[in-house]
Image (cartoon, rainbow, N blue to C red; front, top):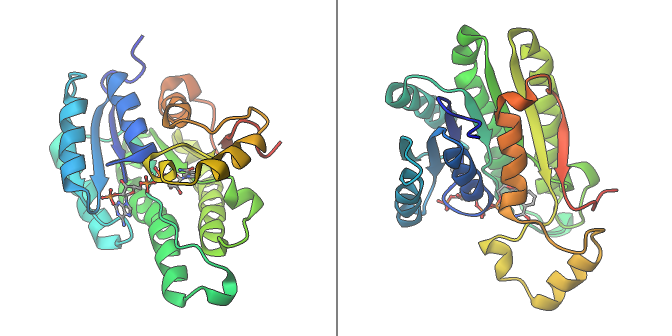
Length: 248
Ligand code: NAP
């Protein structure tokens, strides 16, 4: 059964990693998909071709999520290209790790602007459309680090905790118009980025997870699919972990 037939989704930061897994899942379930990237033009073009094989409309946009004006322009362009938007997935995220003692103002600001302000930018830009159609599902990708904190990631943890507060507030503001806003909190997810980590370190992390394995991009994408679909029409303001029990 295709869960998203006739729906249009926009996913930020989908040229690789979790975002790529999400757009595959949404397109496989019948959605027309627009997605963004910032630098990986070749990967984005290759992904667009992969997604087109599912049969829906697909467009890739180079757009800096941390820029308020760029987000406005993005949403306007997506609306022109697709006619409507039903699902917004705010997935963009970066890390600039370091202990507070060594963390520069530049690295603090970059993470807050890319991970948190980006969510404000796209949500604000899409709000009028969702209000007019009295529907819409917003899914924000946060992290277990935003719930628990992590030494060496104060900027990242603050940005992801901010996403959780933003998600709950928007759920309260827009719930009466049937617009839903939820957050997904992945734990340790195996991506191209984590592939480069030391095998011993990965084993140590996996041993600390109740399910004894890292998650896959598909584990995250399956939850996003559920939250994007009409199977979750009475669910809003929630933070759902995809972490193999890590925070239990
Ligand atoms: P990733 O592999 O590094 O991919 C990040 C994506 O964001 C790429 O498509 C990148 O585009 C894009 N991007 C970065 N800065 C951007 C900007 N300013 N404007 C537009 N696009 C931008 O990351 P990931 O591991 O898949 O993580 C995805 C999300 O899950 C993030 O929010 C992350 O914090 C969260 N998360 C990940 C994990 C994990 O274990 N991987 C765990 C918890 C939460 P380019 O390719 O063009 O650079």
